[in-house]
Length: 168
Image 1: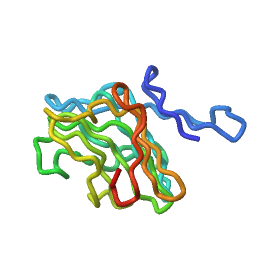
Image 2: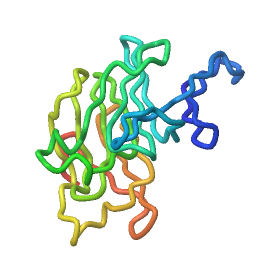
Image 3: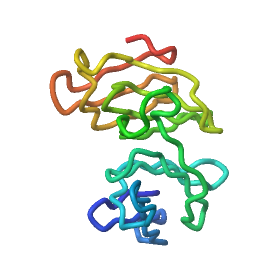
């Protein structure tokens, strides 16, 4: 089990008894100076190849870590959507049985992005404009065994359920 420990800036890997097996400090890159600083990991999924995909409250990119916690790739949701990368914030993460990654974004785009295991954009779910969006506050994502996507919200509707093709 992988846990994003936001307050301590780390990812904790737990064994099947709930005991910490490893701790990975997560740092983010400051866009101005390029220096790394302590992060606040928010969302996490572990891929079949051992890579760890992390969203962090302090950055606008999705960080891909190798099994030792080294950053090996950054994916900017703004770039995937052809928007200003500084104005699209990654949020929650979920993973389906096929290895597709579901990523909530906010800012200039408020939707759920479906990424292939290779981290390319496959689909956009619940796409809306900033002004009309009720997706500004996705607080959780989950994909069930049948491919239905569940999104929880901080305000308004508590849970929205989308079909595997993205329809509500």
